[in-house]
Length: 323
Image (cartoon, rainbow, N blue to C red; front, top):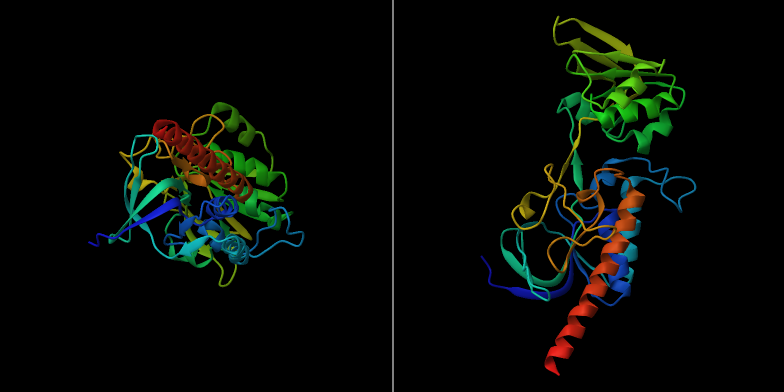
């Protein structure tokens, strides 16, 4: 392992809308940010063909193209964008302390502030036909992509609050929504269950799973299987939404920073501050409620401002101590 210790004022881990927005603001504040993109530069939006709900793109925008735009804007102000993945961290608990981050299991960096923007990964079923059609009708975000299926027939997989909420959202814009629930009951709250049960164009299928997603280039149908009887049935749909949860990308931070029981980083109040001085979290890694590109970008802005203000207080304290 290399003994290299590069010293960085503001280190950003992750490169989605949160990370790039943090980089833009940090660079304009002369924090000379260094960003490591992670394994999936651009985050979840790189798997989305059309982004239609991000302000500033009246005609919509291709997800990967939007991430390229954000990267160019961050680099324009001086962000050092690097390929690489943070694999280990050693955070200081002292205000003004130096945080150590290892990149690709080989190079250790030292940072005065760290902005964590590693995002969350949507859980999928793992079927080859499902993976093949991601971006071609298979989506993990009804709020993001539901509009494209207006007045069409779609299906959604899941039985929790998120699935119930997205099913009723889709029911407002789609002709019919087939909801596949693996067990014999919904896990959603009573209020959400009632909403699903009373929505006429939701076809609720218990003990039902996806056997195959049908279609070559785009989703054309779905083959379902009853996990009690083994019976199979095919339906025609144009969109399949997977709502079985997300996993925050926080594995390397466990034991180093406060998280909730599901692994999301806990931030203080309306800020991006974590329990570690000088470490901030933005985007889906700390937001399991909204999970939108625009909200991620907003918290990226907040994280950069929080980091800038933190450094000012540290410098003021050091000045007073020196005097």
